[in-house]
Image (cartoon, rainbow, N blue to C red; front, side, top):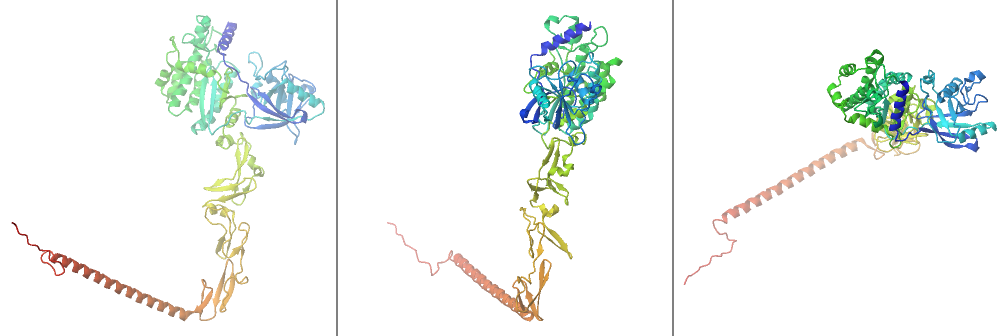
Length: 620
């Protein structure tokens, strides 16, 4: 019976696979020796934790024995743990004889920082996958934390040859471009399954949903990500449509199928039960997404896994409905989305899921469960919160990452050591070092609306109208005896200029100018000069008054007399102007009145000034 289920599953997968499976890769750069220096491609393993968005530098070691890494290196008394101050060890292992994951586990246990598996034949790179749980002891799978890469046979042979010649082989593994990062939002998909009776793989999926839920909801609520869950759905070939297998594993007359959860048709749930629950999961997402609360799907998925497990015979529609109602999700809309699962009709939701499985553009077919797709690139590595979050964070455009990506467990803050080599103003606590997920950037900052300009490495200077409010614009400033002088002016320039009475560069210092000694002021014969900080004092002999604008002394009485004379002249001038204006006004009024009177009288009698135009007409 079990053989029959496996055969059917194989047929279903074979029918689906009309697209292509793309191998996800990262770069490998050999920096020495010169004979093999260059950049090469390598395939990312589907286990361990790739350092998405980062790099790792190390020295390659090829073991003297246990070349294929199928046995524990402790049996050979060998350790690859790097000593303090030395580069990490990249262990080169040959392909063959045991699972890729087992090789990685043995390398990790021996202290290697990464594992390189050299292919044993000339072929295109493949993806190193995890073994099936029913054929191998997979307890170590979840414990693998080092990154892994499959390299070509030719590169492997070249590295071995260089090492045998006594050369040190140094290289850098680079994952900075493994995930596209075009903008400030990441689109990612999780291809999963509601089945919880598939062993270790199902347990891993459920654990991931529960652990990643918090981070996923933070990212979604903040608008940083756009998440979509998907469910792999196969269809039954026409030749098997009436078979017992298709009838028990499919809905809608063989159009949408899933393998039997227990791989045994005689007990437990059938594949069609899984398809229905997958459909319900997909419809729950569609309903909550329409309300602008897509993050609620994570609540449903995790609650369903807890409240409706197969092992307690609660994997039912009734249990799922209770979960939906408890979360305040519109149950009627969910059922409307699910449609008829018994009729001989197509289901739009499941049909869309089947079409989405086929690879498009840079993304290959989805054939492995679970599969995470970040910015249309399939994730490779362990399905674990920290590892997945690292891959998602690598998908943000540099400097746009949300705070959750810059926590200590996700990112090393390079600005903490020597300020990242960037400019800083310790006094104002301002720095040009910007920590990002991929590393640090040296960019002059904007502080309280004030833009700093410069190269970000050696200098940054405040500019704009508000610049003096930030550390005085980087200019000199000093206070003495209650007086404060500054070389910064609140204009749109970024120049520091010493104020009047001072000289210097305006940045580091401004020195007082001695106007008396340099004979710049208070030079009249009656003047007596005394220098002060930033200015001077000039006095005159008794009875005289100092005019600063004219730099001269005048008599105090004469100044008063002159002031009264000026006022008197001003009053006389104003009086004369007023009388003249009044005379002109009276003249214009009188002339106007005369003109009006003459006009009125002309209507009733001729005036002497008018000609006599009277004529006598006689009729004949």
